[in-house]
Amino acid sequence: MSQFDVFENPNRAQRAGFPYLVVLQSDQLDHFSTRLVMPLVRMPNPPAMLPRRLAQTVRVAGEALHLAPHLSASLPARLLRRPVASLRAQADTLRDALDAVISGV
Image (cartoon, rainbow, N blue to C red; front, top):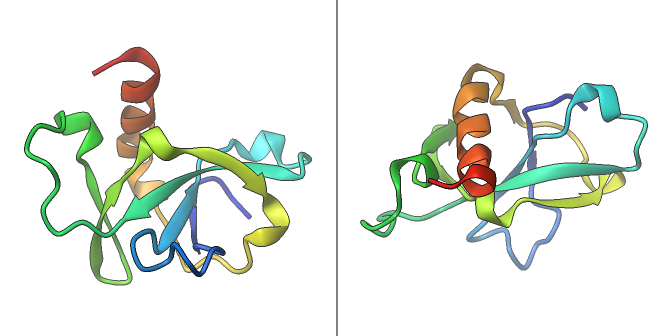
């Protein structure tokens, strides 16, 4: 499992709204049994008042999804099965969204 790999949400009850999780945690910390992940959200029309840094979109399996950096959390790595995509090419966008939560928009 690598940083910026995308996995299907292991929580079936949440999968309709949050189909995927992207790993944010550095590969240097892969010895930990948990991973910091950011949910990707299905939201046809994000609220207009969201700051740009919190309203970024990425594409997974042809679907446009919104980042939810304010919902980032740690979960057991064993729950993440097989990666379905990588967002390494959008690493700057992911970092910027998380930074907006930490540093402010």
